[in-house]
Length: 612
Ligand code: M6R
Image 1: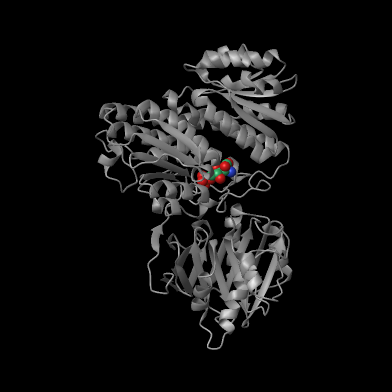
Image 2: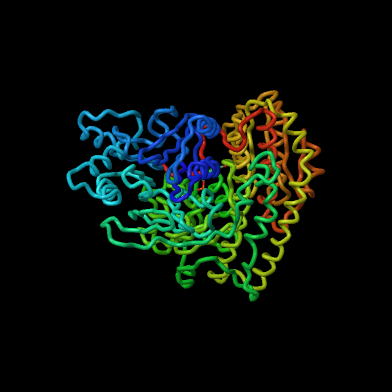
């Protein structure tokens, strides 16, 4: 959940680290710090709070040096204080460490360092102590070997960057279940949690694999396995540039990313039809014949990606006729799911680094199931381990609240559903081409919604102080009810919950009283009349209703709801969620802005959840 970066070989290393941390801040933002080698000793500045506090401190506490490492934190062990902020040093101040992950056996390791004084409550500090002890031993090894020896004693997940004053232009990095990339350009060596931090310098990086360790020096990096033998990291090139990771005039990344959805969806659909009605996946390492045998699908994901999976389930069952279970990834591996080699796992993750989703997919693969990843990040851990990949080509998503990732994930699910239908001989090439051609209308329809948000702003103004909002939906509207509630609570901190509309009478309707707000996702379709009945039931009990519908259902909704916001009719009913979610993304955004919330960096959250 934390962001780490290292730079060696640039006179401006500290400034570079600070600007890299700005692009990593979405990974965690409760404290930050930087350490640089200054005249053969380590200089450290760290602060609790947002990165601006570190930036201010660096303005006065001038720190220079051509080699340094930095960190932006999402606290796991120890409160977000100055002391617990990374980097952490050994007691002599000659070794510094930044870390993303959790060292699970840190208490044991601390106890073994009998009598050592620790300056923080973190799990990370013990790593600096251990590396320093290895270096201090008679005939002590070099930094690479010292770190390698220490890694053999660590349990848990980590991406580590280690610096020693005795090897002033070297950064040693190591990876175990937490992302870490390295890169080299003219005279400069770089390492970071992800490409967002390095895109300013290069679009070509290498992702370390689990168990690998690397020595980064000015202009080069060398990769080794856990035994110290030379190894290869996975090189990859990113196809977006720095401007994609900047706000480009928008007040917030969230708003910018909402407005990027027409292009993101268009890119995700691009080239999926090979011209003969066959669907093209980005990476296919499964025998297509194996997919024809699939008799069960698990969709595994978390948060917003889980809601996209719910929409995907409806499409796969409809087109491919395969039973689908959608499961919260963090639950999957702690029960006994029935998985065989005829079970297909679809793991959905924007970042491709969510630990729960990766672990769940690995758990299924170990039982023989092929895994298809739907991800937005090329080269991410999930995409490298999956048997096939369908990329959502949404470009970097920086706001913690996921928006363009969601709509592109649904589109990817629709494409995958059609692909499976073909493998199962349930769809003709002409039918697939026809549906894909209709989906090509989506970008234009999305643009119409996001470019005219007057009614949505007015609704946000009217309901911004309602403390509890209930979201209801049915069929393809239900995932949108869940997603609408998640968006509202994470950016505005208002209490929101979603229910299948048909469940209301089984309990939740007891919450409704005069003044309650119900958001009903009620697009035109075969469950529309049932949604209208549910709307009438909550209104009869005093609730205000904000209905999200489609243009052809507007008149009917206006007869029953207090506020009606419609989107254009979708080119296919199963694509409706791609449109109905848009007003709810904008509604959550405007409510949060009106309430003065920190839209892009909501409290307690981080963009990528790399710890359990
Ligand atoms: O990167 P992932 O798609 O695996 O992330 C999953 C969730 O952590 C993510 O969707 C989260 O729920 C977002 N904050 C939602 O806006």
